[in-house]
Length: 278
Image (cartoon, rainbow, N blue to C red):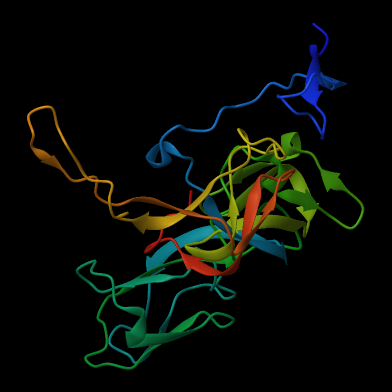
């Protein structure tokens, strides 16, 4: 079916109901399919805070779990060098009972693969779990910053590319929680442009893009935090007092709406652990 159209009649300026002047203007307009916004503020879509990133993916090698030694020494090591020491792959050190030793109790030389303890007694028969750095060509890569934005808005999906190639989504698999990318064949270090999910940001993303504007009914409404508005209490049918309580706070200023992208940029950072943005 082709896009439906409607002829709209508008009263022009200068129209007076008391006069015999019923001059009208006409305009041909398209009827657009829309996703209706919520009637109640509490049902409004929660916007997700993100930060834009660009980085070179790092090569992820083999996972190793092994004993460290010499047992009881201040400096102990495993059997490999070039451990990974960032992202979600920090080594985990345990004592002989399998209890994780706090990272503040030691320092690691990731190049040499050694652990130097700073609290006595030094561990006996300890173990370490770690990932090795992969080669210059590899099938598995990871980004240091994670998690990656996980939503329906296509404008904020990750883009993976190399010096000569832009990879289609079908050419790799990504775990958005850990930031691990897996390719079916070995590739050289790819780059990734993405939006990282964070708790505090100035940029907030909706799962819906292409917002409408210029129409009273469909203009976006933005809510930041909660407010208990005065004078909104009432009584029920039995005369009992009803307290409305806090509801999402409608705000008109302090932000810029990006209608095509389906996002909002605020003038200051908002911490979503304290303030919900809708």
